[in-house]
Image 1 (tube, one colour):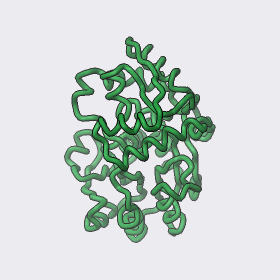
Image 2 (image 1 turned 180 degrees about the horizontal axis):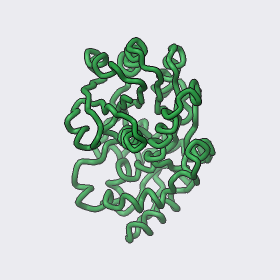
Image 3 (image 1 turned 135 degrees about the horizontal axis):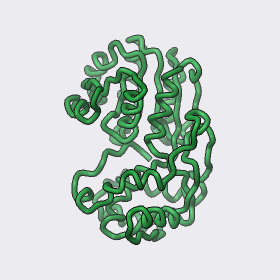
Length: 295
């Protein structure tokens, strides 16, 4: 199985789940040696989505492909879609694509173009559409939590059914254990409960043993805040739009699909935070941030 984005939150979880399930895993990235150290048991292969010459060697001999869009990739035609074409030509039998919730109808997000392209190929495919990741608390929100003791977002009183990337990884392992049963299927994946950000702050406070508060931001105030953090304009726009959408309940719905596929409820936010307390230590915050896949 070839795993794209194996250095990220979702791709790494997928690789670990596949290894635990007994699959042979090829972890693809620009630094295969580092991937092999981070994912014991995996075989690192070089793949650079901006360099088509790496596509053929990476997919050669792979039975299946796990695909995720790195945030830095905006033009999916010559990158992800071209990789899919090479994989089909190489005889890859099934592609699992980690998209985003709502991408099947939202033409604005790049994931929509990947989904459309994938459906037009002769290869078997499964599309997963997860909502907001619990891992956002340890990357996008981490600096505010550690330095200011707050979550600062323009989300109002919107609720989010946070999903743990580890559950996505295990879902991929279920799909690839019997790809025929999931051929040409699209699954919306969410966590087991919807929480507002006051509740999220309470979870962090309880698990970390220090007060964390939620401070609702205005749209302009949040954009300025991200600019002071040094984020590029394009990322500021995306994050601001996503979080203002939470006010309208865009990530509130709890979907039972993942529980049905896994045969158990998804991990709660308390479980995620409790298992990763070190991510919010001052020492960890001063180091390089963990990899981010998408929202």
